[in-house]
Length: 421
Image (cartoon, rainbow, N blue to C red; front, top):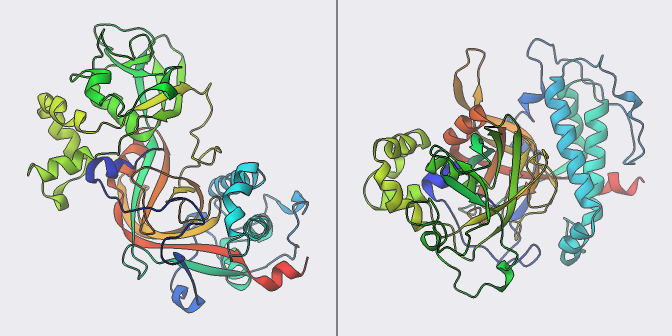
């Protein structure tokens, strides 16, 4: 649906297969022993650093969706409550998805596999209960290691190496009408789109080589909003959603509503191919600085990506992933859904940029519980994960810095825990 901000710069991708459940060679997840996680803390972001985590109380509660929420006392110590709330929100979104006909259809081919729909759903219910009833992140870690089985992605190299990038929801200023300042349109999908012949028109044919549109374009009259910066308009297409501050004082939210039938081409990758940057030198800030200093190059490079995105207004709703549920900052990931279980609980160990107490952004290798709730046209293979980092400028800065190698694990409730119900 959308691409990571670093994929915009670097163009990482791998080959994919047809759909979830149709694995070309071997299942991409392998059960591992807890010994491999001996030195991995299970989510430092959930903790309050000022609290002593030595007490590890686990409250008993069966894997039942009616488990009372009365145990969610705010007096429980040790938690970063905003992070616990965000994780609970992401879990609820996955549970909502797993109760849909779309989820049933996605998992039907895997009815006899480890990652079948009932087990994935009950694993999430139990994780939710533990998140609500344990008295600290350390207690949660103890319970998860006791009750869950960990499956590691084989990664890009079949040895567990996974490439991580980040994406976000941009916030830009825009106008509902074209002006001398706001000239670069985003478009709604034409009603006739499904009848367009193949190959579809190229990006240059749709929006003009300069991005300003054309009276002869098939999209004339389908403009939704106008932005003041061509690269910003392009980045909205890369991300697939946006929260726009309108010149009339209102706010407009946009969501993905379709794409032309072309593969995604990374602009940053094209710059590397042309020798403008070495691949290991390219970062998003450098790429933005390059185009700011060489605006004429936008007309050379942006039209190389013929994949064109259409939008719809979403009436203030949060950004939504490919599972049709909202994505949550730092808690939702995008993977190749032909390989990975949609909506499932996962743990990532990756270099993630975070804002420090000084206000600076620093990258450290950390662990995070996440929910697999999205996909992207450039997120292909068992060795790619895109992390949603939220909305706005800071989220964009973090996403631009997130590019590194790590590991991906999925969690399932142990069979004996399932049989107790």
